[in-house]
Image (tube, rainbow, N blue to C red; front, side):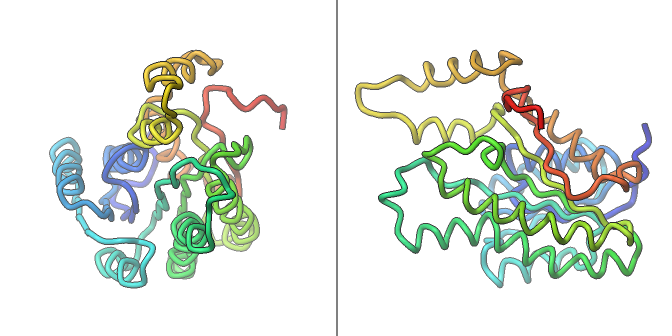
Length: 259
């Protein structure tokens, strides 16, 4: 299928590794020029070189922190009129809400809610004026299946989803869609970081946690990042213009509900 987005420009945060990287690669394979924003120069440059070599598209690297005003300014200076915007941020480590102070909550909100909203504020009007735009937020299944130890993520990401529900209905008439991807367990650095945060002295080992999580999923495995990347690319395509404001689970069937 020709997705109809060759020559478009995408700005992606948190896309130097894991699920964000998979989305960048999938878009580049469709002929989209990508600007990748991330904090670690070495990882960022390696990813850009990999995508450039594999696809031949224009790939731009921008180093910075998207939760800061300067970071957002730098990202938009490198790609001032994106057709596609991907918002992606690592979640915080698991923990006990009794130990979280105000600063912990504010950091979570900045990373997982307020920064994505600010990036949308600064880009959707231009998308609407040009008559094309696709915004994808990589969120988490935690907004559908809250986990107590992931309270910071549950709260901040749910706030983003609630905001998108309103905005997405205002932009779609101008061919600008906004959707949220809700990944379950994926074979990624973020998943390894999550499990490492759950380890306790004398408790289950990393390998035990890793294997039990796979066994507990109806698919009996972890998702492959490229599977989520392909979903992202389709939602960014010209064929997905009637899909907006949706929270799409990509989780191997682990969500147990009908709706």
